[in-house]
Amino acid sequence: MALKQRIDETYTRYPFYGSRRRAVHLRREGVLVNRKAVQRHRRAMGIAGIAPGPSTRAPGPDHPVYPYLLRPTTRAYRNHVWGSAITYIRLGMVQSDLTVLNRPSVQNRSCVGVKQPLSL
Image 1: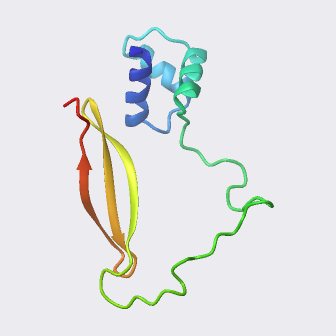
Image 2 (image 1 turned 60 degrees about the vertical axis):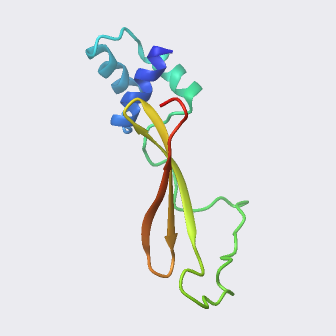
């Protein structure tokens, strides 16, 4: 469990490292681990390096095209249309949920709130 936490911490700091570089980095910090163990734990945790895959520009042939649902909507008044995004960030030793709302007409984002876990 401690090894998975160390892998997650190095992934947060260096998301572009692959399994080989991450294993070297952990060995330099004093954690005895080999590349295959790092690969196994990364697969179990769902962690992958940030790198473009092959032919990422063209959609697949069976990929559905979703309509833009706001096109027929007339924005009648200010704050009529909102968008949102939720992400998880690490603040020290805990993870928090960050929710961001934005207004498409203004193209700015404002942070609405941060949800802290109950274990604090």
